[in-house]
Length: 176
Image (cartoon, rainbow, N blue to C red; front, side, top):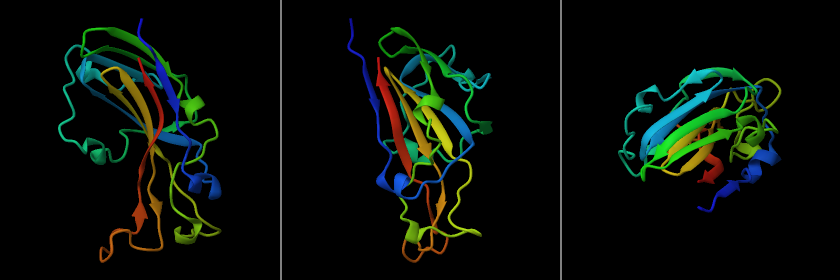
């Protein structure tokens, strides 16, 4: 019998220091290193391409940097758990329910931007709808959050288009 490891990660300190809440979220699922993979969330199948064929390995070491905006937009918080069925690279079949609502139950947008660097809109800092990504990678499922937070300062010195941070945060991980 294999050992299962479930990890809930704490958000960055700035998330609690400057709480930004959300009532809807965007969602996408990615499969890597699987023989087959199915992720159903909010009655939508996110992985039709990989249901009956291998997903392959990530195409670059920094593959997550290309996760821009999630493909399924404006999901109200929170539908039933995501249903995940997959066959890991070693041929073992797995099934899991991933409760996005439980992972993000406090409805806080994870960020690492100090209030002093946040752009104000009307009465203070606000943010839009965060992106939640579910990654199935061999025997591990990871849940991430990413949200563009507008900033007062350039994040890349000299780049006038870099007034914002969209860090990707691992919020939950489970290895089967």
